[in-house]
Image (cartoon, rainbow, N blue to C red; front, side, top):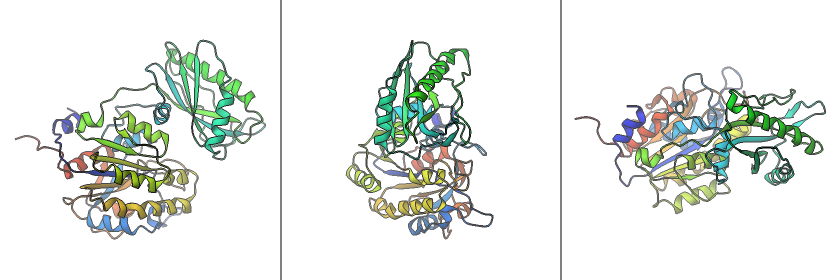
Amino acid sequence: MNHQQLYSSLKKQNKTKIVMLVADGLGGIPQAPGGKTELETANTPNLDKLAHDYSCGLTIPVLPGITPGSGPGHLGLFGYDPLEIEIGRGVLESLGIDFNLQPEDIAARANFCSVDEQGNITDRRAGRIPTEKCAELVEKLRSIKIANAEIILEPVQDYRFVLVIRGKNLGADVTTTDPQVTDVPALDAKALNLESQPTADIVNEFVKQAREILKNDHPANMMTFRGFGKKPKIPTMEELYGIKPAAIAVYPMYRGLARLVGMNVLPKPANMQEQIAQLQHEWNNFDFFFMHYKYTDSKGEDGNFAEKVKHIETVDSVIPQILALNPDVFIFTGDHSTPAAMASHSWHPVPTVLTSKYTRPSNVTTFGETSCLTGSLGTIEAKYLLPIALANAGKLEKFGA
């Protein structure tokens, strides 16, 4: 019996409410030895009080030393073992824009990028072009035709779009074309097995045609692909844990993740205040709410320490509005760390706080990476955070006689 099966066997329904607020890429590291992280630098009076009065600690998204993508990071927070479920980023992006992904479709996440006259990448995100420009460029790329495959393209948000390849007997084990650095060209797609060779060939032919179409569209004059995959079938959160969950998220990928695990994905809000309004409006209709905030991650990926600090402070400022609803359990955490000093995701454990009337106080004075080392929650794998929340909400029966 694995951890999911055990918790599922103990599930108990009641009217208690759980709110999980995820600040994407929350964790950080100091800019210099002996300094403070972004979270430790930010003015967070609400989180500081919660960390003192309730349980705070650190969560490990996958395993020590493993740098997770957003998919595995969130799956752990939703109570799944991220090592047991592999989901391509393209699948999540597709579901996030309500695309009707078929079982045999291959989906990939695409980023427009900038390349110079030698074909070397100068900006992996094409200056973060607006969504309207992305849609315009996607429309141009729809002229691409490839034998024995239907190519479907959909804009997502900013510089991101989705490539869906519809055909017969196509494998999804294809390598990324994003080298993750600048001043080098995009990589060729390579198949990791014979079944996936036709898929890699289709992707490389697509890129060849796209290069000619976009050659005069700087800064978005090229693209990279990653996260090739097919839609998996996994049990829903309601089936596993007996909860009725809702997702309140702006960015498509996280809406897709929520939909994949059976959450009711509420209409797309424009900003955090609209997310709060949705939470208030839907309070009586669900017993678990997942709220997602993206910009702590994107500013970390940009290497912008000061802006990440500001966005942490923005999230802290809305917490009283959530707590005014009197959730039985409130969780604040991140799906992974994105230190501005690294300008990327990292393996560092994520500061986390969990409140309920049954928690042990941590008695720390601030909420941050260092203080959470001594919190009463301890350092745990993220996949156990939801079960702890369920226990605090009275949603788990006793195990054994």
